[in-house]
View 1 (cartoon, one colour):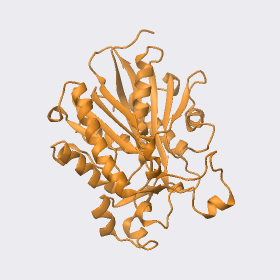
View 2 (tube, rainbow, N blue to C red):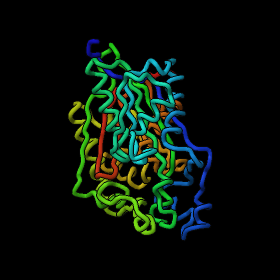
View 3 (cartoon, helix red, strand yellow):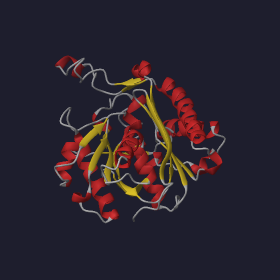
Length: 336
């Protein structure tokens, strides 16, 4: 197969669990309130997975919707990439579990990308590059998270922020030049890993009765430091990617930021000299869904007609690692 002129997002799909947990509900179990949460994060409610509902299950539903919208069958997919920081199991990969649930072919590569909240952006770059190589025609990219499984529900600083969901995109080779990723930046700063992490559960500190009792498998975050770094790094990545593409912020139809915190997004918009009207938000309904947040926001913007054929769209994220990524796309109208 020859290398394509472009790699486009042909379709998108999402899935969120049925259960909604409102701020008022959380205020009955931790010292918080709807006003406290909304003013500090912009979040009104979040979705929480039910018993036995795992990232691969949510991812399968989002992927099925994306395939249906594209008019494709599972056997049409040549590559599967799953972005998640909450895999079903330590191993095998969630991608392998999802491959079986979707009935994808057994002769295709399937693997996870672990870049936390930047995972979908990382995965989009990796999957696009693999399709661009000419070896694959269509890739399925899924961001799926069950953050409720790693949250300390007694810690009001973190438990109010996170939710569960999945988003998916079908990527496809395209003969039309000038679409898909025009410029991108992926980065990481492992020296700041302690700002957002889980202390136990890996080979460095395997699970034990002591680690469970100490809550060391739960997410821990230095919110103030993460906030400061996120605004600076996300805005800087946007500026560098736009410069690399020979463009500027005024030409971008929509910025799709990772939905972590309304104040972070407002800070990025301010540094770029932009109003919030070009930053779609879904925080109020979903909270921070990590690798699922960008596809959730992208699908909503596309479904509402806020992004059209030929528009410039900039995806930007920041997460544990610390990782970040920004991709400037020229949008090719996907299937519905």
